[in-house]
Amino acid sequence: MKLPSAQESGLRAEFSAHLEHIRTLAGEVDAGGGSEFKDVLLKSLTDVEGILGEADRLTNEYAAGRLDDINAVVLAVERADLALTFALKLRNKLLEAYQEISRMPV
Amino acid sequence: MDILAKDITFSLLAKSLEGLALRQQAVAQNLANVNTPGYRRKDVLFEDVLQAALAEPKSREETMRTIQSTRFEVVQESALYFRNDRGGVDLDREAAELAKTTLRINAVLNLLGKRIALYKQAMNEGGV
Amino acid sequence: MGLLGTLNIAASGMTAERMWMDTISSNIANANTTSTADGTPFRRQLVVLAERAGAGGMGGVHVSGVVDDMSELRRVYEPSHPDADADGYVAYPNVNVVTEMVDLIAASRAYEANVTAFEAAKAAYMRTLSLLQV
Image 1: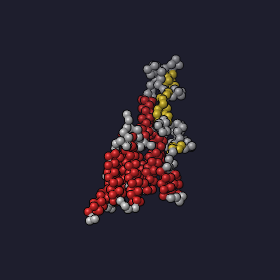
Image 2: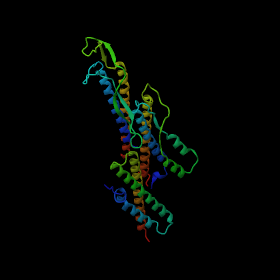
Image 3: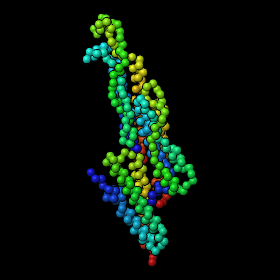
Image 4: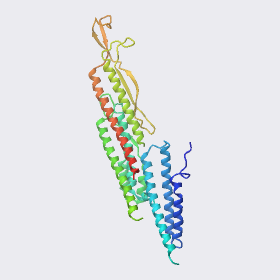
């Protein structure tokens, strides 16, 4: 039985749309400014995807009985929780900023 | 966004948990073999390893790398504890080791949980 | 390094000590059995314990066999006993009840210690899961 790869399903896939949205917003808000902020942000998003993927991988392994180490699974999931919460809050802030900027008179 | 990536304490706690869980297993092995002839007790040495990781002055990244790459091993003691013709294990000592290890596991889990909760609180109220 | 591995180890210890206790009980019950099914006197039995190497090294313990204690039987002069030999001696089992009681206490203590280990591993597992609660 082939387990779904972390890319095909799970937290990582589920939230890829949100993370894409953040990428888009970052581009819009940062347009014309220093690229440092955007680069840091994009790198961070890749890290988040990695963490979500790892949480998926360990959860799959554990559920299928291939992994015994519950500590590793729980810590990976908690890490994903924190990273994702942060990313989503950041998205909301960027959205606010974007909407602010859109409302400004030219 | 990987808040925990730079959190040395969190990594240290996680590694400590790994070592303690393995030690709990070694103590269980000792207790299961308390009456096995010729058996020598086992342990996991990890405190020294983690302390060494913290010892020398290092950059934060290096310290993190050292902690996360630490591997623990089960070691077997060379001395037999003689008790008639039975095993090389002192039951009372192992029972005490079990109690100590279990308490420490609880402490580390509580510390981990609290740390995670604090991060969540910071994100909710810190206006991220 | 699974906490589940620890549960298995503790469980194997409980099983082994329980088998030992059963053997001891049988020894005590048959302390005066001069004729078993095959006509010979009952012989004291011993359990042979051996360490088990599981996946990753530690697999607990197992009883590799139950063997007869081949030390000398007790010979008592009782010419009127149905199992007396030509010289009037009866061969009684080589069971010393006092020794058996001491062993029983040791087995019982070891059994309880393994139960404690089992409970400790289980509690650690549950506590880890509680991290997932909000």
